[in-house]
Length: 309
Image 1: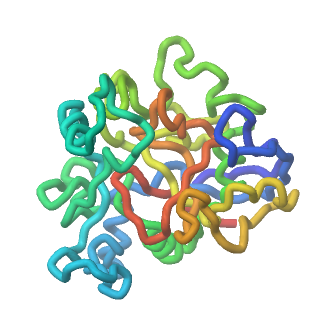
Image 2: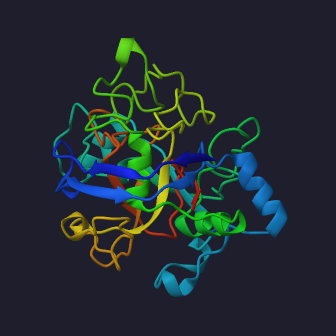
């Protein structure tokens, strides 16, 4: 772990999404943070020691999915599976819509699908495995799974404020954790998407999916992969307006969740972006960028790291 010294910083950005404002000054007490995202080999040690079964490996409860046929309630998780342009235009034709020249970016459901059998052991589905990926970050772990690991390790998940403070690494008001240029000296400093999202990845950074932890340079605090590779769960509930009422010191996050796009779904915060983040789409690798998901949802581009006091 790395010691993150106490200090002040400006949280948020006026160059991002509407939930990144207002920019506000915070004071954060010092804490320890995992140097890297939790890897597959680390998570496997936890599973072997405890017998823990992740949410994605459990059969869905019929009570949570009324009306869904019993045969459809099988363990699994969500994977990235982008359609081709021909497939998109076929769907549009069936709906009576005009063809398009590029895959629209206003409907993320086009490139995500539920894969039976997908889990941390099989990130892309039944026929995939983590053999050879021992040093890659664990994925397909939901917030509940991350919390269980942290408790076993004698740690906890970081608050959203702690995460952003640590990610900035002492750099003030920079667009990225390494400065204001996306590729200083022509080099990629994080594992993100290059090319036309979501159909063409040029892999200019060397990776089509996750990369081994600590592949890219650390930030000013000595933390790796605070930009890209996988999204990281935080402790906080998500609320788009929390910044306007946040305490000035060690904010714990809101008492409940609200997402205007899905008002009835409780969500937790994720930070840091992933290998799927593109400069023409989510730019989630910015230190101020916020993402959210329901705490029981596992995804092929989401992991976590732990902290302790």
